Image (cartoon, rainbow, N blue to C red; front, side, top):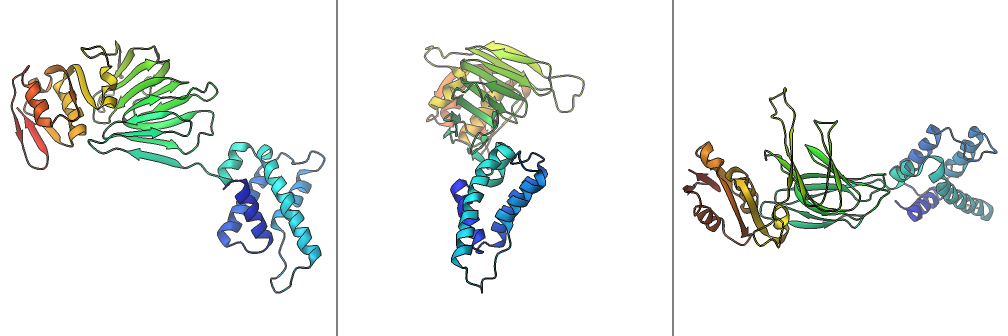
Length: 334
């Protein structure tokens, strides 16, 4: 509800036409008055100010059976005008954030992508986000606080609008990435054995949740890989590894962000990780016969238009293995 809507609601209340829900909203505002000890007018006591506010906003209305005289009608219109001015003054009295939270609460927006699907999202601050397959991004419909915080599960590429007064933070299960304005990629799928933050341009500060004393500043073309501790292992912490981002053989693109160009690229990557990416791209479930095949490593790049079977046949050119299509989109590699 914006200021115009507030005025309309106040006028409606003064006319005795509000429903119970609308009246409750006004009473909620009044409750905020009572919680604050700062006087609205320094020349009056708090009790006097609250009495004035109560008389303006919550004075009992004449029964509807009694027609309003011109004098009363005029008085109510004046009261409505005063109430509007009072609403503006509340911003400084109870605090802008608390006031806005009452009359115009922030709503969380969540964007989801299915296997094989990608989305481009524009945030309220004009930041652009490319969301990869099988991911979710949650963000407020307006950034009001001192920080612009979004929540990511999966993979996303960010081009953040610069705002030195309002840093941008990406929260994942394993880490948080703090930026002012930059281009970077975060890969944080729940089922993957590692979380990656790759910086393309600018600077970011990465904090790992289970290593509160470790903060890593990334510079362009650097990548931080976090191998989280096993859930059942209480004696060790996450392992951090600082690397350079990978370029394709043509050096015209970056492996970590090739997915935004509809390409699946990998450099000396395990078959296990490639299979996890293929599951999200093609909507299948892949299992392995043994650990040796799972840890085989490959380098390559394929278009998203390439069929799964063509990708597998291409991988077979460098490492011998077989695969079998099972029921319910299950693929077994042996």
